Image 1 (spheres, helix red, strand yellow):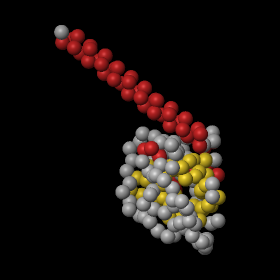
Image 2 (cartoon, helix red, strand yellow; image 1 turned 135 degrees about the vertical axis):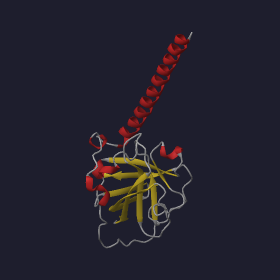
Image 3 (cartoon, helix red, strand yellow; image 1 turned 180 degrees about the vertical axis):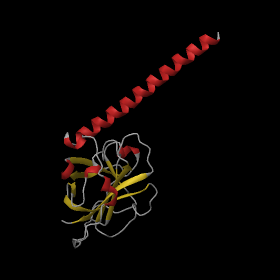
Image 4 (cartoon, helix red, strand yellow; image 1 turned 60 degrees about the vertical axis):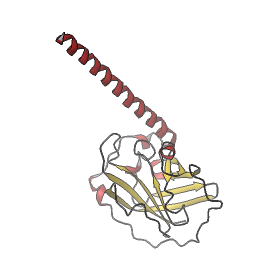
Length: 205
C-alpha cells in the first residue's frame, strides 16, 4: 500500500510539473506573439547588457523650448493615445491611457497621475516580457518618438538609470518637457527583480 501511494504521488507530481511547464510555455508564446507585432527580428534577439550599462552618464545639452501642448478633449481611461516609436531598435508600440493589466497587456501604459506628452513630464510603463523587451538596447542620444493623430513629439534620451522598484523619483508630475519610459530589470522574462530600468528623454522637436 505504501509503495502504491508513493507511486501515485510521483505520477501526480509529474502531471503537475508537465502542467506548469505547459503553462509557462503558453505564456512565453503569447508574449513572443505580442512582441512580434511591435519589433523587427533584430530587435527580438537575446539581450546583452554591457557591463557599463549601469553607469550611463547624463547627456548635457540645451533644453528645447516649445509652447505647452494641449490635449482637447482629454483622453478617456483605457483609450489609445498613440504609438511610441524607438527607431534604434525598430520598435513601434501602442500606448494606452492607464497602467492596469488591461493597458499593459496591449502595449504600453501612460500614468494618469503625470502629464500627457507635450504638457509636461509624461511617464510610460511597459512589461519587459514583450512591450519593452528591447529597452536594454536603447542608448543615450537615441530618439523616442511619440506619434498621435495630432502629430508627433520627438524626445532624445539623455539619461539611463537602474533604480529600486519603489524609487519615488520616477513617477513624479512636473512641467518639464520630458518623457520617462520604465520596465522591470533585468530584462529577462521570469527572472526575479526588485529594480526598474528607466529611460529618461527630453523633448527636442
